[in-house]
Length: 441
Image (cartoon, rainbow, N blue to C red; front, top):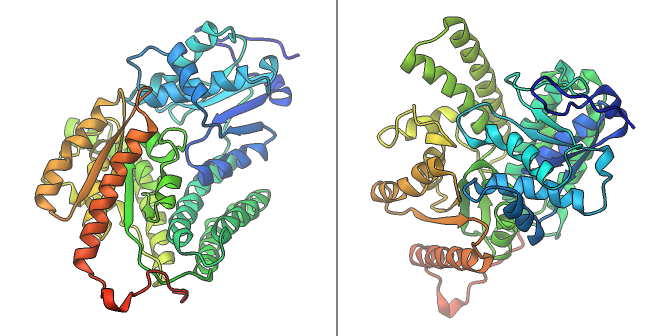
């Protein structure tokens, strides 16, 4: 068994010896993105396992181990970790936990400290917690991100956004049930295998892969029917994580609609752009400003490449650029509004309702006041300026029932179907079928 070592601040370190023996648990947020990221870490010799559990006992563990005024995402992540350790599946003496640490104004910066407190409270004080951060907040001798790993993680984000975008546009219309998810898994396996060779981490190769991904998704046989589109926005964890939103995307799919989920790259660019706005508003180190501008331009260039790849296939809708979303927010919020998802959340709603996805579910977790302001707080003004907008804010907290959440979404969908019927009335005497089997790609 690896020897336990502690940092000067008293936290338990993840050592080089632990890397050989310990299983590292990682909470799931975005299934495609995080699977690729976990596989990237496995290639470096880490024993990483994604937690995909969604049962009620996770919430119960969170309620028992986290103060009741802490935000719902923190409660879920910590509850999921504690539930996993109590499940008997993992040896607590050879298990570590990995969690992101942003370093910003959000409570996400403090999740890691809340988690350690919860571990002590539950009798797991010998379980090390690893901080995954780019701010140098915490370091561990047994865990590091070299350039090779960093490239894999960044490209996992880019690949993940592209595959998620295309899969969401194919899944509701597929002729062969399960074909979309099968292709998603094929590409996850293929990309993981390619990550083993450094030559495949050159951006020229990544760009070529993006072209191939789009071609293969465009080749899937799809029905030409037109379904109601529903956008999903909100706090980043509850927006994406099936555990956080009670499998919202699956519910919407079962309701017969097409989901539109903004990519993670917008959030990454948003975080970089915030640094530039800080310099503009408050002043700051000019070297830092130049560095941030270069990094933002690189990310924006990759986003444009993704958009251009998708645009080659007319059957797919392309996402908006970050610059366009930022422009839409003018007149609604100032760019200094950056806590939580900040003005980006308002911008995502505006981009959806002005580009044909007029129906939106805004996921609002308990304890995240900034996102209630830029989410629920901006809906009225958005509707005033965009009468076609059909937006519903759904609260997620330990006491909220799935039935109540889904009933409110069903009411929004009923309004969406009524609007669609008024806009495109069917000729009842001809009994026009809803489903067609004519491929669109």
